[in-house]
Structures are given as C-alpha cells and as structure tokens.
Image 1 (cartoon, rainbow, N blue to C red):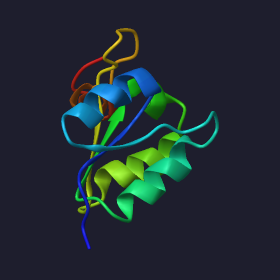
Image 2: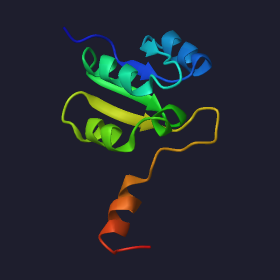
Image 3: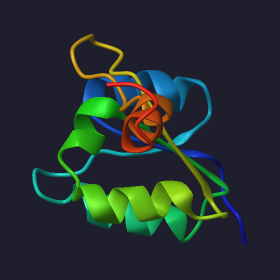
Image 4: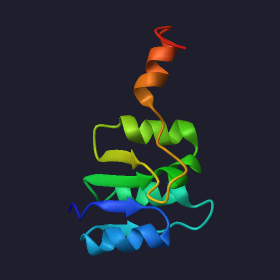
Length: 99
C-alpha cells in the first residue's frame, strides 16, 4: 500500500512538512541513505532536503533519483546553504557543451 509523501531532512524543517500532511523521517548522522530506502518502500513521492542528500553516497542517491518509481526529488535546503545539484549543467558539462 502506498502511503503519504515522505520528507527526509532535519527536525525543524520536518516539522513544517508534517504540518502540510507529509510523513517525515529525521535520520541520525550516517543513516540518511537507510531512511531513503525505507521511504522508497512505502511512498510514491520522496522529498530530500539538499543538506541531507549531500551526506548520502552519490552513486546510490543518483540511482534512486533515476528510478522510475517512486519519484525522488532533492529540494533546496530551506535554511539556506546547500542547494541540490544542477543536473542539467552537469550533463551539459559531461557532453562538452559547457564548462
């Protein structure tokens, strides 16, 4: 059974997402990817704040982002600071279209 969308990030930001009706996971340091895997098992939509995503293994996070389901999105850090990677710019740079 598919549950509510899930937000993964710090406690203060998670509180706001809970008020919006989302389920939230606040992982302990080092447990970020495990929280993502748990959320992917139950939700059709998983939102991860950029600071939390930055602490996940990049290859494994990229695989989760590329998977067809569930939809996994990295959102900007709501407290400022970390931003999600600019995937379009990264792909264009890999293709030699921009530096």
